Image (cartoon, rainbow, N blue to C red; front, side, top):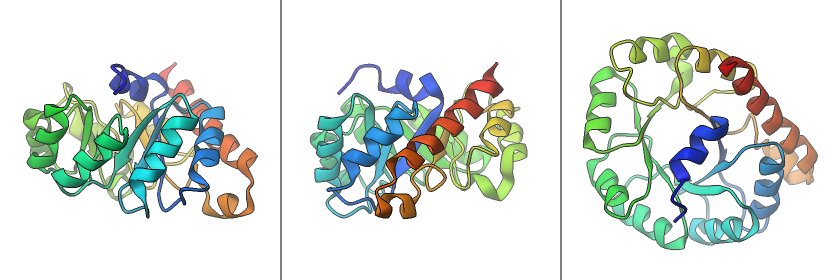
Length: 211
């Protein structure tokens, strides 16, 4: 595992999410995303042959490659052994957090309420993934961060270049972005330049908001 996985997530403030991308396409998609400036890539556990996809992407790009949508410690461990450098969950799952902590893998645990966010952080999560972000928008992220400034928040779900900056201005440490970067029509058409442009737009939006 790279010792700086958490730092690379924070570096550009963007996690690009590859969901349902085939093992054959994943390396090219990952390369396009990285060309756009993203240094952290999440491959979701519900992707067919996810461990093979993690291995293929890790062999191709010099990025932090993680696993997302993790629901149990067994999946987390299999992904770690395949080379996943960080773990992302949609919920607060203490068993998954323990597995990530045990093997030194940064984890972003999913939460929505202040109670869930604090529970995840105190259980050992490095980041709290605010999910689904689109339900409450940037205002919800700001409301969570008010009493919990010590928790790095990563809103995910409905985040795009159009609103990524607003989430950062609301206090997000990073954002998780799926289809707004990894457009499945572009993947099917092999239009990797479009994917790179999508990634670049989100990175630029985050950078502008940080300035």
